[in-house]
Amino acid sequence: MKKLSKILSLSSKAGFTMIELLVVIAVIGVLAVAVLSSINPIEQINKGRDTRTRSDAAQLINAVDRYYAIHEKYPWNVTTTTYTASSTLPNATFTMGSVSGSGADAIIVTTSGEWNYTDVLVSTAEVKEGYTNRLKDDDKQLVFKDTGYNQTMYACFLPTSNAFEQEAMENCADGVTPDAGDPGVPAGVDPCEDPADIDAANMICLP
Image 1 (tube, one colour):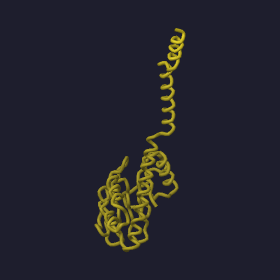
Image 2 (cartoon, rainbow, N blue to C red):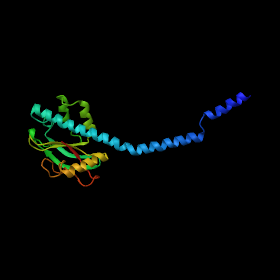
Image 3 (cartoon, helix red, strand yellow):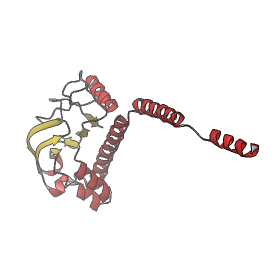
Image 4 (spheres, rainbow, N blue to C red):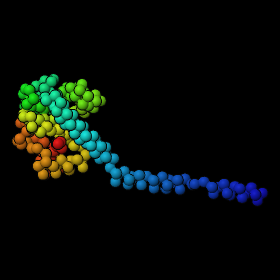
């Protein structure tokens, strides 16, 4: 009888009470909230997207430069010489006039639905088709180049993360990003809406 009561006594002490379990769950919940608030997952996701968009922009510029070095013309001169430049980007609307040109000196502004020239880069193996499909699907970049063989080609995008918005504001304030009216920037294009306001539609432009 004594042995039986001992066994029953031990078995009753072996588990956790409901109160103890609730306390542990509450503590884990508080720690999880603290960790999530410090990491800010939405910011991390947006930063990852901005990083990918910047990488895509750099890859596009390099591919166009390689194409021109080999063929001595730009890929958009193969498909068309006239682009209607108007588009809506996330959180900002750009209303631009039409730009046109011919030969290697054509002015180019790439916006919504005007990514067909990137197919030329695929046909010459400068980039892969999956990359150009992502450019067309995302449609987050504003690409322009002024007339002249030696003019700079720009690929700009509107950042979504706080870190990239801060960088865009600083680049605009420092003159790293071309501004409206600068040489090479088509009329109606304004990559730096307000260099002093982080909430403004300031863009990051490469190179």
